[in-house]
Length: 119
Image (cartoon, rainbow, N blue to C red; front, side):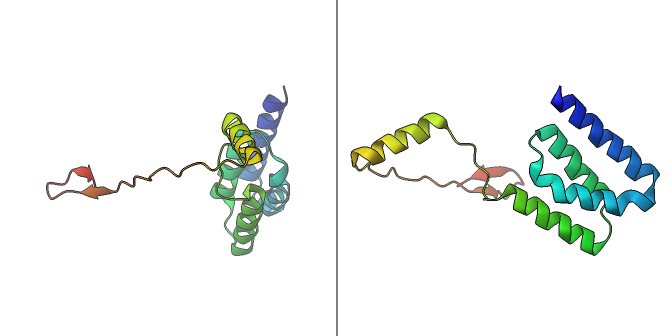
């Protein structure tokens, strides 16, 4: 499958980067340029691990961070609920106004005895 092949490619790149230090920077630069095209989570995790493990030069780190943020935008990442989206669009089309529900905010605090509590 595509996922298996892509994961094997990342493992191959890991071996290349680990065994040939002179190829690290060019491989990581090219990987950062193509990170926005990665759609499989396991492959993305492998890429992020490679970046974290082997990026040592400031310029490379800066380029990788910029590329990753560009690929992930818009932030925050939120999984869309299709049913909620459909309901929202339907209610907007009807022109009906929904009442806003009260928002409850809790805060985790450390108590005097060292345990955690909520406020």
